[in-house]
Length: 397
Image (cartoon, rainbow, N blue to C red):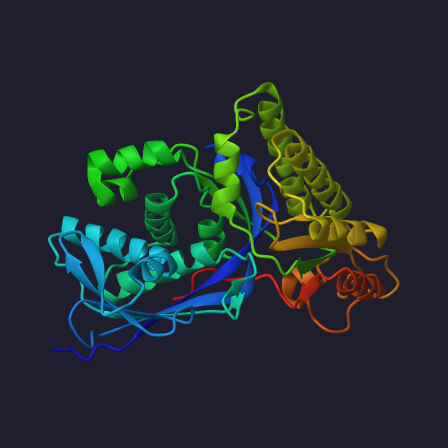
């Protein structure tokens, strides 16, 4: 029987890594990310039948899940393994919130969940953090439907616990960007310590205790900088690439430690440049990030740079910008930053450092000649410019 409660809708934006990939998986090591204005939407409604019905625009039909102990099993589907793969992050988010409810003496909820995403095209993902966004959106929607009043940090923490259930090596930077939105400086918690905390104190205890290494802070939109995003057309698996680094003997060697230290230094420089409005220093930091990722790729043989990503970066450099892969590489997206005039500067002043794209106009029409040239070069190289803007808000309520 339904209670007539209205649907609960929560949205979470996708993300781009500006600097700090790979090194950020080490606890306490920094990265800079930006949320983008394409979102995953989770809608939770009263149940239309037993268990939990989950629909997704990645599946041809909804799947009903019946609880058997602590597990959820699909019923009435031909390919149960595919359903589990496609909905893994939704189910992990549901299990995590359910565990928190159980610790408060409340039963597992029965509900319907509908997922829709702007982070893919015809099932092919752009590399904008769809797994993180769907986790954050699902946690927020299910928790709100069940009457849990959670802060942004508590939603992030629940999302990280859900993600760590599937991949404890993930940094959680995508979850932070999807939760807080805008531009952020982020340090990953020690996931092993966090999971041990859950085993000892439960989910509620993990929400209340400090997490070693974790830090997040909002950054102002970079001033006088345009953000452009190009998609290579080839999806990549962040989990597989990061796992590949962990499996290699290179990890833990002096070159690996040098990479982590160099990454930390350039990320701090990038964050400082953003906070002080120094666009030249910001672009220099992005160029350094590209060089460090190239050195990592050469030393560890991960396949970060594909021909399309290299062409994307070279095209940006040719018009005076700075560019790099965003995230683990191997395909997906790259970003370019270009200096632009300040549209709010007083008449007669030099282009003072105020944002053109990063405040509200990223991907807008009326672009500068350099941006037009960049998009033309990308298109000629088979890279698709994406019409994206930074998302000023995170997980919407």
